[in-house]
Image 1: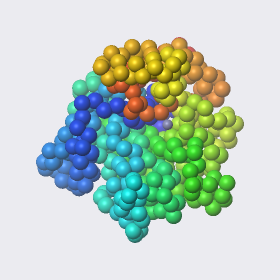
Image 2: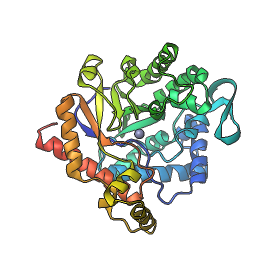
Image 3: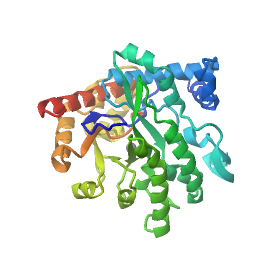
Length: 367
Ligand SMILES: [Zn+2]
């Protein structure tokens, strides 16, 4: 596939749930993932819950396209840990959300992501509804470090990354109506380095680099951007050769010389999403924040309280371009997922981001 390095808007993944029975939704996703591809490709009927999942997922996903995000992530409405751990055998859910390792970990199904299948199956329909020629989208996958930490040991990372590499490969589609443009691995826990994650330890660093390389290789080798979503920027990421794009939070420390030396690109985080801090900064005290939440629950939302303004976003984007160079900033979007937002505010935030990206491209003659 040919890659387009021009600046595009992109979101992280999660959205607030809008009118959804989450139990049926989760069950439908699992059923869809367990249905062999041949069955639904032959147009055999899918279970009712799987059809419910597809309908609800695609409604949320279409909202991102309508908000004009150029590379929307599939709508991540499921829990980022259990969505992937439930695809593995060899582990068992134990007490208090912990997991027990019973055997070698491997996939229980073909290794598909239900959300990607929902887009693949109805791509033509989505294009027609949204008036677009083709869907160019992002896939997010919870990374091997994050999933190993959820299980509680780094010894499982090799088995997990082998399965994630299969999942990543299956998520790369290139059809008339849909194309995977980015595969991002979510690794937020680097920020906290919870035990047993000790980044000072050489063996641990080697293990992480090797396994990130394994999961990112399928995208890289298919001409799809491979990315990492991180809340901090440990120096080990530079050694992952198949990594293309760093999707970090606003306060992560990244230098231009490293991007150039290791040939990596940036997704510029142009809108903060730490909603409670933002509300507190805007409103001044906790009582007013609580009032804003209670109003939001009643449907009374002043979007200017919940979303940063476009001028601020534009200045951030221009700063990133000035600091790192136009050729290194290939995506821009909200800093993190929008699950915690009231739905109206989440969509408004995406609209603001996409307007800012389009304006900057237009004003500065970028493609
Ligand atoms: Zn994040």
